Length: 168
Image (cartoon, rainbow, N blue to C red; front, side):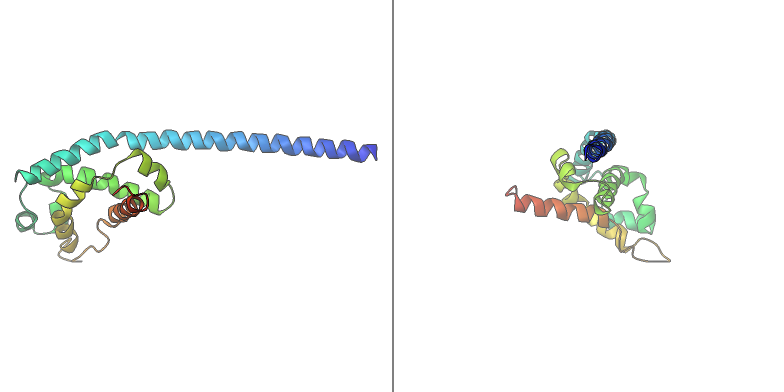
């Protein structure tokens, strides 16, 4: 019986050591993930300023309308990559990537929601451009139906969470 007790104590100790080691590894991976998230979120300040700049440019007619740009560039793809929409691209691409990370489970939405404000005014002011680009993506393929889908997914998550938490 004493041998069984000693064996049991050794097994419990060994299990505890394994658990403690695994716990430390998990904590380190969480710290690493948070560090990576900070890098990603860190660009948000620049993105936020760019969104404001884009909104002001649209409001002050410093950027041609979506229909004028489409006439000039012929396809949504060329329009999307135009110099006139450089600020639009910067903001849209940031939130498109975040939306993909959230959708695929690589980034926790609740964490992102707590750290980054969705650019609602950009969402509104960019709508004509987003729609025009997606509908007229190329002459060969026509519409790019998933254009902007990840940012749209993120927008809907923000909207639902704001309603749920009485933040609207």
